[in-house]
Image (cartoon, rainbow, N blue to C red):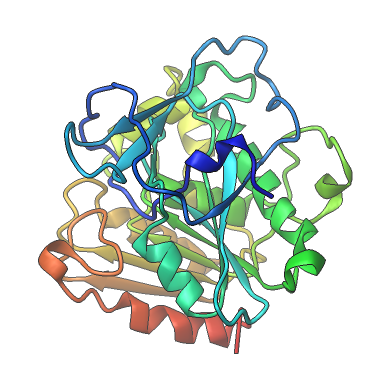
Amino acid sequence: MIDRRSLLALAGATAASPALAQTTQATPAVKPSLEIQPIWPGKAPGGEKVTVKEQVILRTPGGDPNDTAFLNITDPVLMMRRPEKPNGAAILMIPGGGYKRVAVSKAGGAIDKWIADQGVTAFVMTYRLPADGWAAGPDVALQDAQRAIRIIRSRAGELGLDPARVGVMGFSAGGHLAGRLSTQFKRETYAPIDAIDQLPTRPSVAGLFYPVVTMQAPFAHGASMKELLAGDASDARRKAASLELDVPADTPPTFIATAADDKVVPADNSLLLYSALRAAGVPSELHMFEKGGHGFGVTGPQGMDMGWPQLLPPFLRRHGLYT
């Protein structure tokens, strides 16, 4: 399904809190390569008090026209990259941005291409941001993620997908959202609006990259916490938003990758979540690379070989995403 929003397509990972670029409207310079559909059939729920207007900006003024970000998202979308030889599996990819923005690329990115190269249909989403006045507050992005994975499952017959083989990958603050989708899939965060909302929201497997995990000192990523909790960082709200404090035993198998030298989101976030997953008996795997910083993709800084593209596929196969 392609509509007027097809001037947009999402990137893979982004740092959680780099300085915002100039908020001048960016003009798309490259034709999108991803197919696009809205996440909600009409207006997104709980927007009665929302007055912001969606913006697309260049992350670096005068830089690469594909290196863009979304601010004040009001119409979240789901983008699809089809593999040449699909194997029936799908992955929902959730980019980062510190809950202040969502990084996007008008022609897709290296990670959704890598996913498709595995034979997996790649879906990449934008999501609404909690400080923009939505009624759901800190749950607004989770509403979008739950709806997005349901949409993927609703299109299984049309696209030749197995609805039981839909995973999630999240990056930085997107890793926090992917973690919430994985651990809180039993929560109904919005009133059902159609038959799609009868479908399950539990991912079959999860991959979290340099994820924001905790909202508690001393390892909380302050910028993400500020945006997510929108000025109400009470102890109860911080605990409720800390993934490591509520990991049910039926959390999907989880792969975590981070770098020890991450100066944005401390690698301790990944350690906290891995320990909680182990304590709950959830099949999990943690890779902490010596170097790589924050926001690495298929490769790290200066083309560094990060190694995760070799490590993740065996985990996905072992847990049934594809053979």
